[in-house]
Length: 230
Ligand code: B12
Image (cartoon, rainbow, N blue to C red; front, side, top):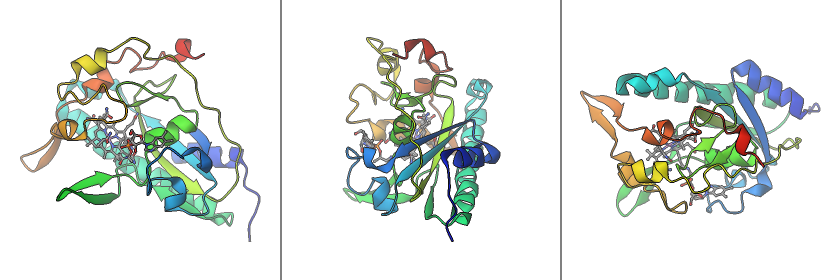
């Protein structure tokens, strides 16, 4: 049996699960996503994309070990949150699919296995009004800057959608583009994935994320985007 599910109920489920921010996007706003990465490719009946974000302390940027540990635990936490919310949506009689925070499918490209998410969580968050994607290719939220990790739930419930934020956040600023040691930024249509991935190293059998400059160098990185919203 299906009981009516409102956006407010879904937002409450997300907050109960631990989300600091919640946004809801319509599934039909993903035309520009490549084939295979649209919400309806993952859940054909999908009407709504519920995006969850949670923040962390910028103190972890002081050391590679702390940042990597934070990233690992936050990704696990975000995926768990999406699963908890999916159970509650399902209990109301709707179809739902939780989207993992850390990817999920690997695709063979030129003989190399590449990790992909089921959908782009940054684009989902942007569509859901949670912020804008800057030249650093990160979702930047008015309150938390780029200090958010993301996950999502896709559902066939029709909900009220949030408006996209319009912002001139980057304007002529190129600080991140110039600073990126991998030269991965600068072309929004082609993020330099390989160069960036070289900073994800396994040392002493442990993952170490050796660079997060795109997060720390952005003038809006830790918030204060609010005054650029048009
Ligand atoms: C694989 C992966 C990586 C890879 C490749 C990243 C990449 N940008 O391609 C590597 C290991 C290099 C990486 C690095 C980092 N990552 Co990463 N990564 C992912 C992961 C798991 C999957 C990305 C993916 O496959 N997306 C799907 C593909 C199709 O999307 P895409 O390539 O971005 O899309 C392009 C087109 O397909 C199109 N597109 C695709 N979908 C859509 C939809 C719409 C509506 C539109 C208009 C266009 C469009 O636009 C893009 C440009 O052409 C995501 C989690 C997720 N599911 O999103 C985290 C994620 C993107 N990473 C994240 C982070 C934080 C990082 C790092 C900062 C980590 C670090 N070093 O500290 C770096 C920096 C990356 C940067 N500046 O962009 C966060 C971003 C959070 C935020 N606030 O923005 C995410 C969302 C993880 C999370 N759960 O929070 N990452």
